[in-house]
Image 1 (tube, rainbow, N blue to C red):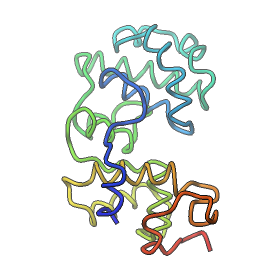
Image 2 (cartoon, helix red, strand yellow):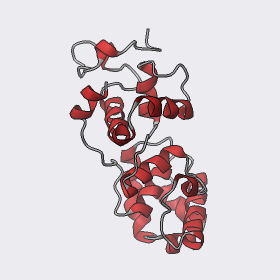
Image 3 (cartoon, rainbow, N blue to C red):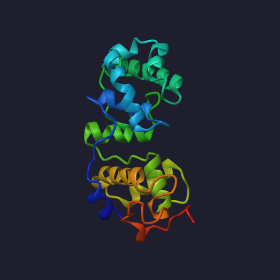
Image 4 (tube, one colour):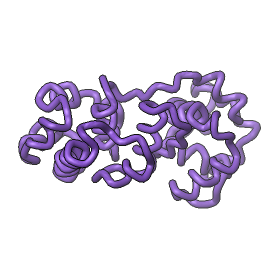
Length: 207
């Protein structure tokens, strides 16, 4: 599967617009239950007002809410952003930490966000199990449950460390543009984008 998808989707850059690691981790935290396009519409104003951990750590959550109110769960996300900035500023000298253990200490940061930051900012292999990767891998039958933690472990068993980041992005793009949530390409007929791995896919959950 990876031999087919990775050459088709070779880009390993996040679709969330950012200028540095702090902006990236904020954008990924905001992307929960939102599309990348929705997040990209609010982050320019957010980063213009609070461009670094020091400034964001001093913001009031209510101020941040006004900027990100178009996103889902904006109150919780605003609170998490301010607290995350405070911890980065006070505990990590204003720099986004570079280990899984440290990243998971930050509010609003789970393994998906941590893996994305580690791969994009620090060049470490990352298994980025977002909603698209989880959906595609479930339909492919890699694991029988829609559980991100289990799927991450399963991918780690199947994909060599040096290929995990490229695999994650290729599957993500396949899920965004072909194996979509409702009526994936294989279920839409001749007008849909052709699925290059249909011969390998048991279409779990679709029949």
